[in-house]
Each structure stands twice: as C-alpha cells, then as structure tokens.
Length: 102
Picture 1 (cartoon, helix red, strand yellow):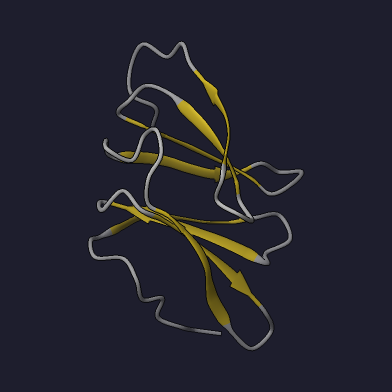
Picture 2 (tube, one colour; picture 1 turned 30 degrees about the vertical axis):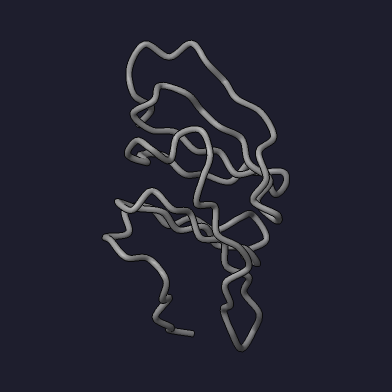
C-alpha cells in the first residue's frame, strides 16, 4: 500500500511503526507528532500531539517501545518524553541528558 499522509506543514524527519505495524508515528520540523492507524486497506490519522514538553524545540528522536504502545520522543530540550501512543497523552519524562537527544 502506498499513500500520501497529509497533515504536517513542514518536513517530516522521523517515521516509525509500532511492533504490530498497526500504528505509525510521524514527526518533523513543525514539532507536531501525528499518530496514524493502519488497516489492510487504509491509513487514517488517529491523533496529533501538538503541545507538550519538547514540542517547542526540534524533535530529533521518535521511537515506539518494542513491547507496547508507548511512544518515546526526544529533542533539543535534553529530555526523553514517554507518551501514550494510542491517545497521545503524556506518561513520564526521563531527565539527566547533558546534550540534546538524538
């Protein structure tokens, strides 16, 4: 399946799928994360994360936890933020990095 995902207003830097392949997260220069739900026939926007701890800074890192729907994000703010990948809600923050998270 090939489909153009519309919604970002800037370049998409990161795209990642969860372990089941049913959820895809995209993020980029506009500091908005889109979470997409996939089916055999379609991809639809499930939610947008437009505000939160590191979205005022560049988003560098976006990855799904391998055993669930937790979405890990990081950027120039030097934190790793854990978000619920289904709802987009904040779960926890990992601090202590001395430099931006790549």
